Structures are given as structure tokens and as C-alpha cells.
Length: 266
Image 1: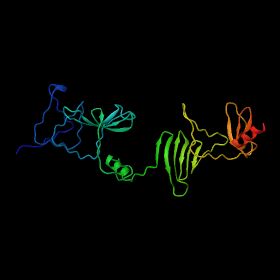
Image 2: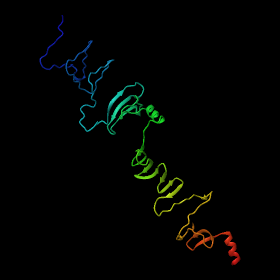
Image 3: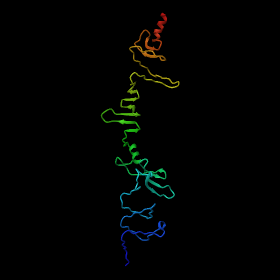
Image 4: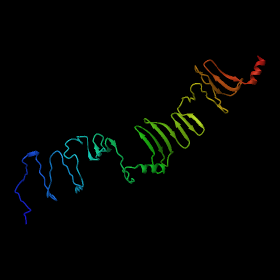
């Protein structure tokens, strides 16, 4: 029987006559290395049909001496022949994992998410939204947001905050935008001593299609240049109770019957 074991004292090195340009080929059914295997060089090629690795963690970019991946990315690339290769890379510049086919992002499929940190699939999101299962109470972008508030104790509301300032709020009974508030059938300016302005553009006019009820004032307002103020007060000699105030005068509009009487007298 041939001797299948060769013992060597100390290190053992095989060098071809051609030195670093020569090749060594081992032609055998199975090659077993009983110990650590260290391979140095610029590339390692494995052409086996089935590869099995017992190690539970594979380290890529081993020996990195910098802070992060110096080359920018590290990952796995799949050769797809004449089609663009598929890659799973860690992008050091953005601290993200990229799934790509060529230079374009690839679709990533998965199962139905269960935990809070699970990635959501399109089907899951669609089902949650269309089925009413999604619980989304706010939308944030920068320092602006739209939010639904309902703690079951205080007043529930929907509000919009832009650049840190609340600009719109809706409750079951009120709607506020800026300083304008609609409460039931009442429109008011909630800012103290500021005007409530109704205006149109171009040749448009403000039209009142029903009876207008004007509260009687206790005193005359001050006339302002460029404006005529129309208001109500207790009827006086003009009989109408409708008054005007401008920069020149404060006076009551005269009713038809009063005008006839004044015409006869004067």
C-alpha cells in the first residue's frame, strides 16, 4: 500500500521554476486542508458548482483602516451575463443599503410585516389604507405638519401648522384660518381691533341676496379718508336708521316718506 502521509519538520514551500508567474495545479478528487487557509494575491476565483460555508458571518471589506468604507461601497454583486448585474451594496456616503440592477434601484419583495421595525410591502400599505386599518394621525415635513388630535379627553381637532405656526384648525363646531373663525353660522375676526375684509377682483362685486340685519351702534364711527362707512343707529329725523360717515360728514339716510314731508316743508 502506498504511503499517503508525508511529514515535514518546520515550514514547507512550493515554488515553481517560473517564480511568481508560474502555476501549481492539484488534480485530485477532494482536497482537504486540515487547518487555516490563507490566500494572498489580487483575486480569488471559485468555480465550484455548489459552495457551502459553515461560517455564520461573512466579513466583507476586511482590514479596513479608515472610518467607514474607504472605497465608498461594499456588498455583493451577481453576474447576469449580458444583462446588467444585480448588486446589494452598503453606501457609506448615505449610510444606506442599495438594491440595484445596473445603476437603477431594484424592487425588493418580502412578507407581510408584523413588528414595528418591519419593512412594509405595497400590498400591506394598500390594504391598510383602503381597509381603514392605517392609523396615521399626522403628516410632517420640516417644521410644518398636518395633524389629527383626539385624546378622548379634550377637544378633538384637525390642525395645520406651517413653519411652526398654527394656521388652520377645525373642531366639531369651529373652523379657524388665520384670524378668521367660522362658528356655526357666524363668521368673525378673532384678532382684536382688526378689520374683517370681504373683497373681489376685477369688476366683481359683493352681493347680498337676502335681507341684511345691521346691529344699531351706540355712537357714530370716525370718518376715514377714502372710505364711506355705512352703519345702523336708532332712527332719527331721517327716519331710516341707516347712517353714513365719511371724512366730510356723519348723517342719516332719509326714507321716502320723510323725503316727501321735507319736500313739502322746504
